[in-house]
Image 1 (cartoon, one colour):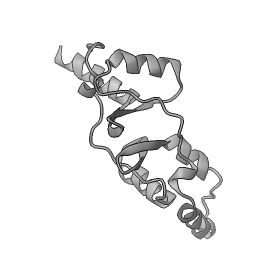
Image 2 (cartoon, rainbow, N blue to C red):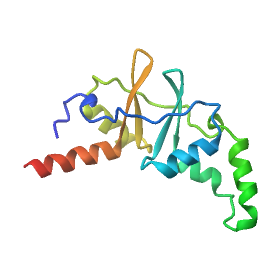
Image 3 (spheres, one colour):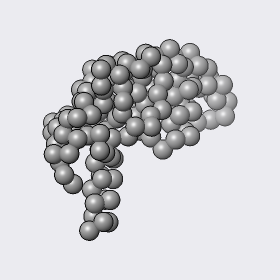
Image 4 (cartoon, one colour):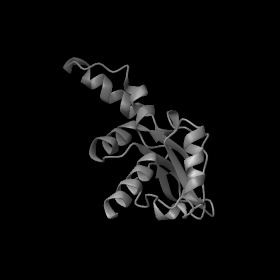
Amino acid sequence: MDVLAPISKIMSKDLITVNEKDKLSVVKEIFDKHNIHHIPVVRFRSIIGIISKTDYLFFVRGFTNNEEDRFVNESRLRAYTAEEIMTTEMVMVLPTDRIDVALEIFTINRFHAIPVVENDNLVGIVTTHDIIRALAEERLCE
């Protein structure tokens, strides 16, 4: 992998996002239907937070699995909003930043997704999975 290439070469561009006022039932539905681990929280096109699947699972860990509590669990998901569990302290990169910048951020920090912004608008997200996928595709092409 050319770590000097721009992040835009490997970032995910087709994003599924939520608004900060969206209920956690919407977040649950997204995680259940799509094979993703991070949901950007946006206001218009500006990112204001991110919800990782870990954040979401930490919130629901108090849920019970028995059928009698299903209504309580669903009510809780409809009562809370994305802004109540989102992470707001985020590092962001530009699409023109090099891949090695993302690698350094991933190495130093304990998160696995970096929003990619341009002119204060969310244009993508780069994850550790994107890095792994790019490396795997490169090995397949050799």
